[in-house]
Image 1 (cartoon, rainbow, N blue to C red):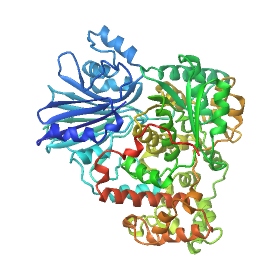
Image 2 (cartoon, rainbow, N blue to C red; image 1 turned 90 degrees about the horizontal axis):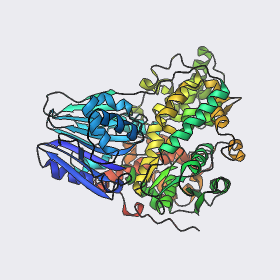
Image 3 (cartoon, helix red, strand yellow; image 1 turned 180 degrees about the vertical axis):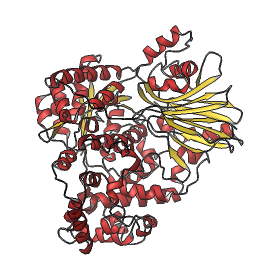
Image 4 (cartoon, helix red, strand yellow; image 1 turned 180 degrees about the horizontal axis):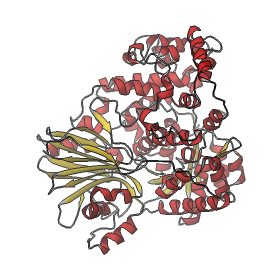
Length: 632
């Protein structure tokens, strides 16, 4: 695992890239390197995992004409290495990184479709003066870029702070991205909160010729497409079990200590159970819990750990929420409002005290329809269009806070509109949104909220449409971003075997009736892991990684909420009247607006950090401490 950065620039490009790498030292504290070639420099910070002694980057081919910097892991590098050696390529190391330069030599960017792993990398082809960037299929690893190259300035990096540190991006907010954040709770691909900066979308590559007179081209080498097939349930569950077993086994390669993050749910329990079959010695597992009843998964995780015989470490805490809130805002370097980032960070920090690599169970809910909101949406009938229009009009005539207003708005939506309402807010405050009216559409725009992400789903069944939309948006934009930033803050490599290529390809072919049955999600996955995980895991209801926001807003974070009653930089994008009404309703306990207010508080804190110049350097020192928090 590493952090990568690079630039094309006519002035001090090597020094510029050095500053960029310094800003992401937390991603790779073990090693660093820069390759400089004229107006081009590429660099990295390395967290040594595979071929610790020989895996120094940047790395080149035999004659030093092709160079790479790489963040991630290639799980099929052994097979690819053998193919490339048969083709005549000579390897100097055992690192998976070296496979990338020889694969590019042999097949060019078309060869990237063969890669199975999590990755973001940059190839510098010196003879052609060509820079090629690529990001893994699911978006596990991040990659940002800005500039056009032909104008003499271009940069890429694992994190936005690196582009700011190198002077390639300016601290100017993109209003459209801020609006998207207020709706989604994160900034979706390919947008970025900073004007002129973009995320390379999952499964895409960027191709740029230095001084070639053309802007970079961005194109997909893979896209998540549902291809449901008829399957026999017994045969399908057997095949899924086999694929999961192979995926977990492939994710165990490491020359440093390795463990797993265990919540006690189906996904993480499946990963740990399969690890016990392949790992050398007892598997080390880690879980975190809060003191508050209802927010503590430690008991469930402990029961699974005992049943599977792992070497388990747990910590039940009452964290300093105020300090973590401020530090994590800076660590994410784009506004990010999933409050489960706090427990995710805490469990990563706990794990890093003993291991350098940890496997997690992320991805199972999106691939196999595990979220309760899928069943809830599926169980609601869609009303005729004229009646929906009438109900929406009636709702608009009622004042905010009126009993039944939100219910009428909900009934006035299609089922896909209702699904969208479980994932994001409307924009306009008149429909329950919090975007400033002059920046928002003047309608309840949830029906078209996912736009380009759903262009090929018009004829798909509802479960396929919901899960595939999540795979394309929520999974990379929220879940994987959260895991990457919180794990990298403590220099921990997090691996997600459920997103292995073969498992994903199989899941995209599974018909909806095998994903959800009788209103219960993960039907096929449950069948596949029967007898592998403890029976109580299969019966346990879905429980998210929740935090006690309501109590925090009454206690530790009360002063932040109160501050929203006055001036806030967030009101450049958020509707002041709507937010302040929600503050009043929340304080009076008329409605629970904790999730929405958290979203505004994060934007407020992020904008203040941007103005103070805090986002152009490394993450806060208190986040990088590897020692676990003391339990209370």
